[in-house]
Image (cartoon, rainbow, N blue to C red; front, side, top):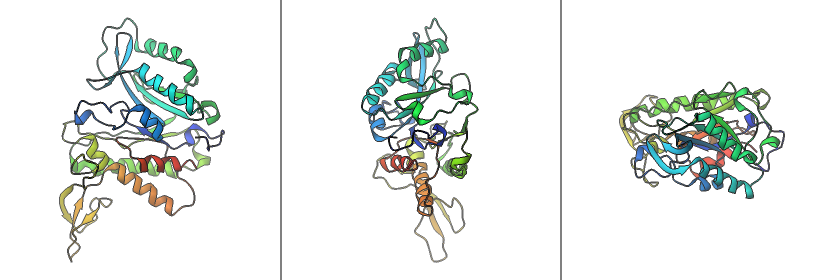
Length: 307
């Protein structure tokens, strides 16, 4: 962010983010495993939007993914960011917090009171404005700061336009998820710099099956296996029509009957933005892009849209 002008509004930024940012510890439960590197590693890689899920327990915030405790606390998150800011004071971080990831337990105060205590403890790190109220800061006001949006009891706020359709019931519903991501991408990129105003676009690339049939890594990659070097999975469908047009075709016959393969949301998003950038001399406005397992190329492409 050091190269981005001070008068750039937060709404005008394109920020790579991680969904369920602390779920790099999953105890090999694939449905709960959304990231592959630590929080410090994510920040060093360019991630500037975090998704922090808490269980309110013993008047504190324990980091959870659903019922799974991730061996971390909100103190760990703040202290990691504090250390990062020591060497990267021109950066800014957006943090979405949810305090109802699992049933509260053994508290003598409300969630709001507990979060207020954290904010007081880390006051020097936190932007003192209220993003929910529609106040959009300029970058000069938030360098070395965290913007917090607590979505525990209320939605994101009037400033946000959010796509977060996370349900991918079966593999064959993957294209439905992509259609929603693509629509939100088109909305954000169609918004010119002079028209951005107070709208903060948020696009979740992440998804999972509520029935346990589809894992986060498949939604992100479309691969046949969770290994990085795995190939795309065959849909089992052959077609000569425009069914799932953004999915790759292979093994085509003379009459154009082709096998259709899955392609993950991270790849599809990257390809779409990359192709548009080649045909335009201007950068695209992407807003906040939350992803599971975002790779180096995807992170850097999102960052490049600020240049």
